[in-house]
Length: 235
Image (cartoon, rainbow, N blue to C red; front, side, top):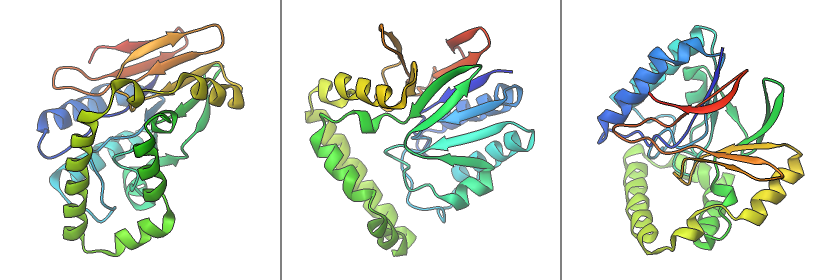
């Protein structure tokens, strides 16, 4: 039974076609797996586990259905949905993972992360990330009315899109030296991450880096790992 890795779906009410693609994957492929790892940015934004919508309900029910079939479901926070908490994970039947997680895949050790922590050349984003990951800020944010949190999230998303258009492409990718240092620190031959939306398999003499792609209307970036090895599979 394979293990699947996905990331950067960016599900939102405005993109129902992506939700349909995710639901199909979870209903058709996921039940035949031993585990599904979602490495961040399942949602385009997240303002708290008390958020309610038909999208959230359908995602929650679908993951729970897969979990109830005995498939282990794991979630690692992304830069868009880092506020997903224990309540949502519990209702989905998912296990929350830390920013860096070591796993063993058919006898091979691997390191998992969303990928944003590797993009250290994007100084403005890293400063923003440091602020919003402070627990006291998150607690204050969650004390605000849901409607206010949604407005704040939309403003941040709008500002982020404008900022991204002005940044050089290279600073939004991982820093090679820093990434190599992280892999060496954990002592593994394989790194799997998302965030950059640049689906690829990078192989060098020290380690292999697999980058999960973002999901599009006509393509779901799904990494399949089994006893034969790994490959990106067509949905």
